[in-house]
Image 1 (cartoon, rainbow, N blue to C red):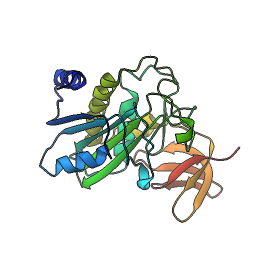
Image 2: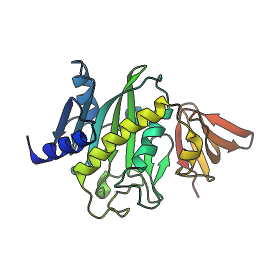
Image 3: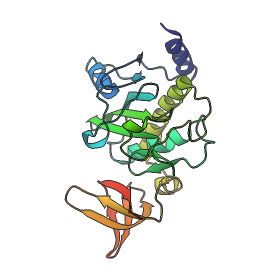
Length: 251
């Protein structure tokens, strides 16, 4: 067992959250796919993390660029409450409360699953349900600046946001614990979700486009409701939407 794995096992053991299977890899195709395969053997708790991915993906099967050295992590999460879109919001909120991150300024969440800041995206969350009460949770975090040739949208990193000496293993441990904590918030009804989320919401009260498969809606982003719906103030009034992609309107 290498030193990093031993250190991570120690941190999670101290927190009484050591999973049955814990794997740290240098490279893999997709950590979500790794967890999916391990789950087939009946394992209930698993954590897989890799320094790079060759077939990483985000929402709607979009490619997730995975340059070496950042964090690409996946785990299995079981809930008592049937899964819905609020889970990704809870995961994002709990990540922002991690000890390593909670003192960084201007950390935001871009609905529904981007870890964001005014400087751009620094991470993302992918929740892939495999049953009504079980999901694979994948998270990608930019620890270090992303090479310009790999950037397809405004992006930043935790180091650029002020985290001078990121401790990769410590962050992985905190992130796994944050996901478990998010599951508990979810099972307890996502108490006060709208107020907690809207405090960190990117694009709040700004002109945005909400892109859906068939059309695009323009309006002022007014945060979310407690059920996780996005609230958009349009020329026709307040609209609640549940699925789509949010982006800032062109200046």
